[in-house]
Image (cartoon, rainbow, N blue to C red; front, side, top):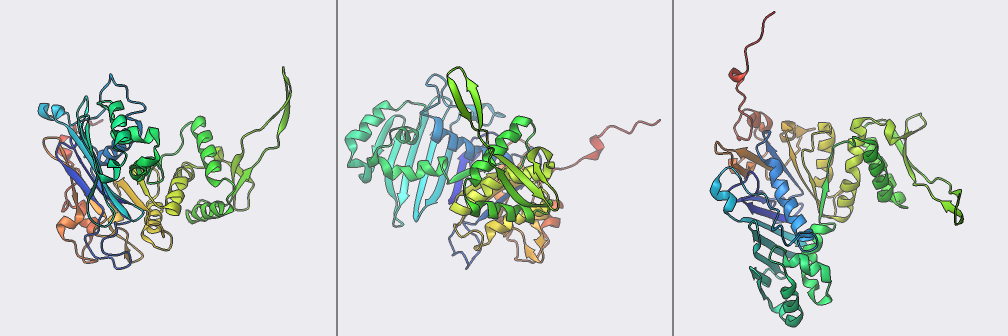
Length: 417
């Protein structure tokens, strides 16, 4: 689970910003300090809300790719704030606090255009901080747990490039003695962090990729098919059943003799009272929903964080509410999965059937100042009362900021005739 994400000097964020997913208000059903299951980021167009997610994405890419894929000649592919000459030269910082199993970790690094300036990992197995390693430039100091294999880690440190993360290097060697660092790496690259998009497929190739992904997700699991069917029926798109067709192998003669060609399975959908439909026959809204479902269902099943940028770009608000409810319910989310998304949809600040859609400590705003720098702040700063105010109306009226200041006087006059 993600407890917090802190970053500085990334894209439109010049100054330090921190997204904290620890509850501000008591939730007895989940425990006082359990991270919230949902966090929504609101803001005007171009305010920078997507850059919060982009900072987390960059951090994950650096963990996975910096040693394996970054060229030693190209430095660090960061994206600092560019509207001030001093910020371009200043370093960028990225820090997460996560829970893996029952253990809390803090991992972070500081980079400039050329090198990794700092990097560190701490764990808190019994609530007390334990240093795993601290890095300054290419000099690394190891804590007691890694000190037992000091010869091996020192050898690894000698292989470290100035523009690569030590955590990224460790993942390539897979030494059993370094397994204490594995949960942090796996959180970024495995089930801990999942990215999804509600955007519909736009080309035939996109549809083929989606079909393969859906078939791979379902595999041979009747349970997964049943759960996916329930989500599809809940979306009221007129579909009642999923069918994965397994084409019969067909013979083919080639220069080396007779061989068997296996065609890819086909993902089809049965509409109410109708024949089977291919993905190519489905509406944009249905395809957007199907694009998201594998990531949603996988995270709800195993836990982890699902991140979606502009969740309302292709989904009806009712479907967004449906997703939020799945993550907020302990019945449908027993593994403590989390949903983090950006949105323009102010209706999500309201209620659904008399219940608030988002909790008071699950709402964040991004606003861009006159100097072009973005800032991130929570709804809880305004001390909202539980059920005592119309948050949607207050947000649209500008009480919380993070809305566009529309000036119709700047439009050209209407042309007559």
